Length: 71
Image 1 (cartoon, one colour):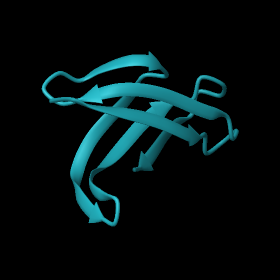
Image 2 (tube, rainbow, N blue to C red; image 1 turned 180 degrees about the horizontal axis):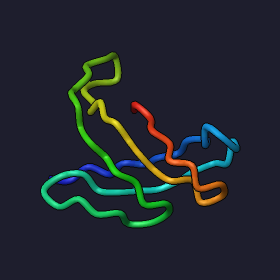
Image 3 (spheres, one colour; image 1 turned 45 degrees about the vertical axis):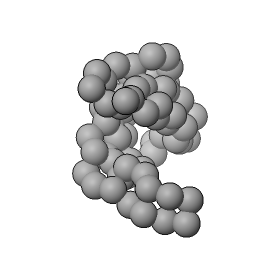
Image 4 (spheres, rainbow, N blue to C red; image 1 turned 180 degrees about the vertical axis):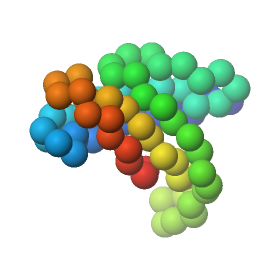
């Protein structure tokens, strides 16, 4: 079963808001917004339950800088 991932971050260089959505699971595809690369690196258990720890890489459409985030 695929989980929906919503990305909403600011660019490191110009502070432009970058938004995108994708499905993570058996088929990875970007549904809308800015295309980004998603690599799962582990699982985190917290008060809200289990979630995926991941590295996200995307290119800012405003300035063209490639940004990397840990979510």
